[in-house]
Image (tube, rainbow, N blue to C red):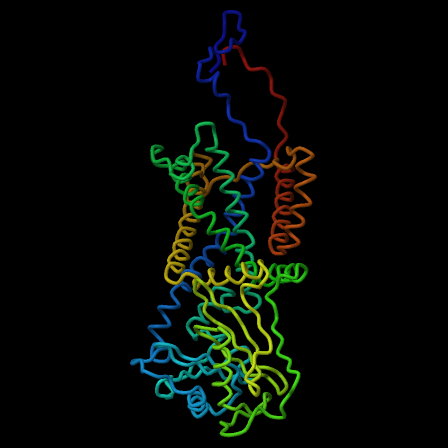
Length: 487
């Protein structure tokens, strides 16, 4: 209520030192635009993130789940003093699984069984893996696997990637990964703008303000500070998830090709080609790859060990005569071992080599990022960190929806189920230089991340249409007359 003097003229109220020192806070056009984008992204994209977090949380348990469900196949009950030749182990696997072509063999080590992988046309990308005791050459069972993953791990992986909906389902995970980094960076920037005053310290940004009591301010504190703590991890999950997505992943691969930064190929060509890979005792392995001599597995493994390939390895026979076999280190835990050699099984020589240390930097980072995203790089610590990220993201989303509910109008005649969105007009208030820079950058990001670009465009179109309809329905306001004196 304003003060009036005797003549009826309004007299400004006296100012206090605090009001003089701290002018009223005004929201910049950039802040208003960022707030509106963060609000709508949180409302519309958060359900996809909830599904991704829940399915990813389930996937982090796969090592323990495999041990519980498939311990009889994956491990031996008693470790022997000496392992039998691979030829005997491969022969035992062939006797247990007469059909198919041997596509790979992973020799057992310690209490781990030897994995003999058979490919069959009717399985498509999947294989049958026979697990053999390396000390007794006895088959301990077989499973239908997918690139080495057990049925349970494959099921959870498919659930996380596409909800068992195939290509259509892949859109959900790519949409979530495409918007996760936008929501994370936007939230951090909004919190910094709110708390980033002269008195702001790390404590103000990283510790929620519990003195505000209950209500939206307290919820916002938990929402924002938890998001700041999780920011680096969420950005990592977004980036690594996009690398093998359907559309953004294809663009990422094209970028690696343009920079010559993909994982190097290893040559398997042989200058001298034997007519057949040796004689002697064979375990019939007829198929597209011809006949594979079981004794060749031992020769190839010996050559690879002498070439410095230690730890767990995978031996892949040549798919056809005239090509070398390949041996690859498959230790995904830190420090990773990914060296590869091509071996001529007849001459027992290394014909080509590709060491992880020589890979391009982007190829190294991409490979390590995938292993960390899957919870393999740092073992149990990696699993715990991923589980904490998933649970933290669920909490942040829950607090976000709670804020939306807490901001709802509660007065009689204005009640609503949720709070109103931030006001429009942020784009119109931006300076010209911001538009000249921001529009091309946004278009470029939308091209690199197609699902992000399409959904952002759809949001803009719908938002503009809704705003136009609202303005048309708004009744014309009559000119206001001066207020009576003293009102």
